[in-house]
Length: 450
Image (tube, rainbow, N blue to C red; front, side):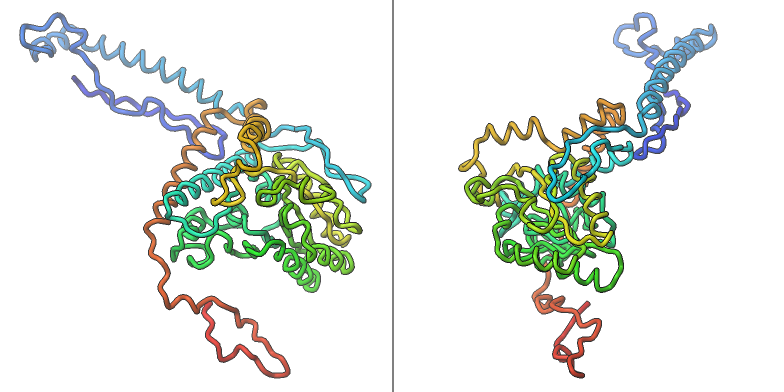
């Protein structure tokens, strides 16, 4: 076989993920000249050198090479055309009709005609796929007894975290309950840090000391294990925002199971009284542990629970619905109108925690119906494909990249060292700025490590 170098052919396209189309036909291919030769002599599978030289002198070799180049050029030309169709002719944005929110003490609500750009769609898709794959990997590691203790998975509810984060600023604040992996990621944590925290490693986002329920990063206050206890804390963060006058707000999340907690109603009252810039969000995934909302609450209209606080009920399986509703709520808070309450109607695919199979209080058919009709990732994917905002191949490429990122993170999370024993007393409190009470600082003698 004779090796023939073929010239590189490239095309440019508009994809934000791949700035340059990979070379089409850019390789060294091999010209199987023996296939065009006459029947070889007995015992030989290739033409001998005399035959090859005879072809060269007669011009037959040039004809063979010319035919190969012509066929390759035709194939590459077709590939270029396909590439142009795939990467250059996408719709850059599209308008969608979304479900109208139910309103409480509001004259008007979020827009129902919304615009999604191609770049936004690809970003939302990648983030939701990352969250989904991260939770599925956590499920696998837990069953292998690599992750221990409590572990609450977020798959099925990805549209809530992504839609909220798309509508607030990085300088805004967010606090949630123990189902916190997704929010840790959208707030700025990396997949490696989250997976390492789940396995209790030094490279975890909380140095391996927080685990599944207690993850933190800048402007993200956890991960809180006590049901409903994060809601008063969120109001406190909002009070600080108002006191500092920085036009920031706090998103305070809790579940339908926590919605009956007395401290939440107390917090509503304080937030309304002081007009705090806080968005209370109830993620109603239909079940508080193993109890359905119908069995736990006399009224399941959680968005009306604030009494003197306006509210809205949102389709929490649609990232665009969540995004527009959160934008509306954020504008409400920043304009000085005080708190607002949102109920996101969503669904968790796993059980309450890893100790809950999730099928003793609901049927497998119910779970499958939600997956088939309301899955947030499938909904976004179908919108983008049906409106020529992406190709199947492009989304598959994102899936492959996400899977690799998750596998690399899992490898790191199982090989990174555990924190040493001396780290137990570090990162307990902060002494900056200094605390002065009548000229004394009660913490001055204690050790603090930044």
